[in-house]
Structure formats: structure tokens, C-alpha cells
Amino acid sequence: MRVSPSLSEKDDDVTEPTPKPIVFLSSDKQHLYAAADDGSHERKTLSSRVFSEINDFKVSPDGKLIAYIADQEISGQMDLHVVESDEEASVKVSDLR
Image (cartoon, rainbow, N blue to C red):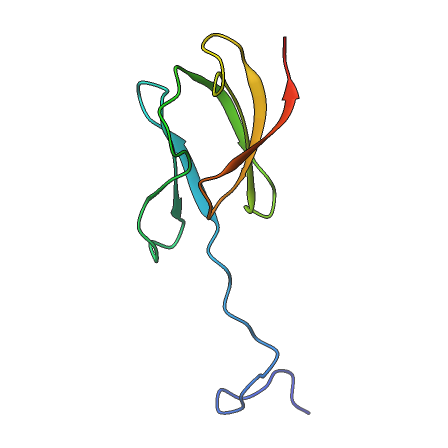
């Protein structure tokens, strides 16, 4: 009776885990960055411009999307935006006036 496969057997169903992003905000709250949790990729800036202020952000459970609140379009007007963790272009999803 064999309880587990031997080390010499290859398991074709095993896949390498996909690195998830670690997302962080600069101390001045003007830049949002992402880096792979396994150190496999360089740090990436998630925004192509400097914001006046990013108030908050959340990462989706699968690590693919980051939602953030910032005054990206009009200074002082906070809106909700979403960006993919490997992209720079965000999409405005609501006005928070």
C-alpha cells in the first residue's frame, strides 16, 4: 500500500504559484506601488502621474486588481478608481462627491 507518491514520480498537475503583489503607498501619499511577494519582479508604479493625495486602497483577493480613492482628475475631489496590478492605466468607477 502506498500512501503518497515517491519523490521520483513527477506530478504533472502541480503548477508554480503565481506571485501576488504587495501594494504600498509612498509616505507622501502621492504614489501607489506594487511588487511581487516573491521578489521576482521589480517594483512597479501603478500610477502614471502624481496625485494630490491617495486616501485609501484595497487589493482584490486574487491580487489582480487594486481599488483606490484619490483626487486623480480634480484636486480635492475624491473618486474611486481601479487599476490592474500589472498596469498603469486606471479606470474611474465612481464619483464620491
